[in-house]
View 1 (spheres, rainbow, N blue to C red):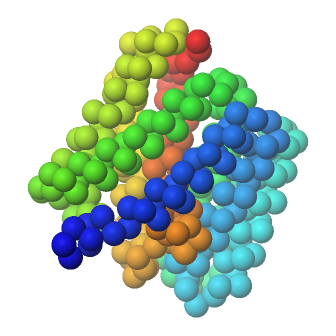
View 2: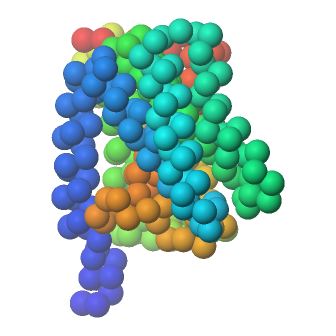
Length: 265
């Protein structure tokens, strides 16, 4: 009984807080415009705060300042839509790195920039490709995480990358790819997207898993279990949205190399 409770003990709070986040997030995705942009601004600022606090635990006030800078930069860029203001997105990264002696400089620099670019990219894609495209991306990330969670605990087996993510197994990782491909197949049946959506969904799942592993590596180097305690059963925003960050960055790269598949009923 103790083994079972240890394996599934976090399931109830994960489901409750996860459902609340999903409903609120989907509502703002559906509303789009300034509503979704505001969500991206708040989420981006909170994740920069979590990252700064993890990588430099002796300066909590500095983490708050960097979060405010992140919110400011995202708000200016997302609400003005002036392409000449895009360099502002690097503001919290530069300010966080200028202080001599900052620990984990590379971790903070790379991941803070990734947060800013991903938050901007999600809003830009919502406006450029519509709600269904973003819904597909989010569903791929969600089912990848869910399939990996249950398959990993049910089947177990060899670890995928134990150095950085000791809980992630090959069974859970592969289950995530399969689940994501199924999402792509479903959207293929109800939309005008091409068959490329299936394998792109699987690659998107892998990108989200790499985002998860990258955040796990930072937490291990920082000596913390969760990025924060904001969300019951989940830890912090980075713990929940690390996969979405990886997926968003992957799609930004895909958009530069090839036309993005259109997901439209």
